[in-house]
Length: 493
Image: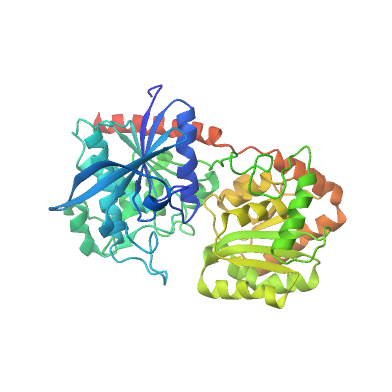
């Protein structure tokens, strides 16, 4: 592998420009880490309408033609720089002037999503050609850009700019595969000979992620345990045979976190800073969080934090079955931040009125409040049914807020189980996806808070000493890029 790589990263999300989940955090941090290691990275994103209003984007290229099927679409490109990384935005009001990234106000997918993101992916590669950026690696993320490996092999195999690019596809959540009506397939320009069960065809529909898996030189997901889980039918949502066929070319790389933004010793958003050596500021953060969420001013009562999409995957319907018995039977408070399923929004949003001083909730998203919850809580609850990686449990470790998690995916990889005999560990894990398990594991954590404070203090110190920096994860991605490059050469060979 070259000592200095040129990497084109293509994604539908990236902090701070557009976010709906952890994908945005990864794409916001990984390029900076790779750049710091001496590589050249460009990031290509959709030019969602709101980008131009908040990020001072500069016009770069207009017009740019993009062939889709047998028609040519036109767009423009804008650019900006951040942390030494150049970002390009594909501007098309036809496709990106929308209410939200993927769905309307009623959470219904936009019917033209396959065209929107097929066009965007093809445009990203066209941009590389037009500016003469010959990447060694094209790194695609999730179904929205999973067509990039296919386009490289189907259309750009002899392209003087793109022909040497190896492709890496990162799966952030295999539950979302981009499965749409086959009527869109012709527009994508992928040739009908590729509409087969081993590539893009999925029970008569087109499956973006499935085709991307077939064509990518290397596929990875965002934790080693999730990579193992998704090789089984229980977790892979139908794609286990295709991932297993990749063999050693399907791997898990744990996400890093950006400690420039998520570390209580440097965090400008929290009421008081603190560190592993000096925890006094954490008590101040707890007091201010109680005040902000109208919780009782009780410094010796544990607060359990939740920052989550309120959806089935996150296990919040399991918690809904037991959160009231927890409040009735344990002396504890909850601080909840999230949005998603309207039924869960209604339920969690109504709890503070029924349990004043014991439960505080904010329906929606507020970045500052997210930092306050991480800093001011004693525990952080993630009862996920599956969790590819998860970031909040890693943030929580650094803030001395011990995770209570279901041992799945990245939660299994990043949280060390509490050993009541020795007092070691960094959190509390359970395996059974049930309300019963949630209740009793919360009870275990709360009893540790009240009855084994010496263990709790040692766990906090151990948690805050964990290191999941992007420097380490970026090195693993460089190894993956090297493996993808070898595979590309073998394919050509």
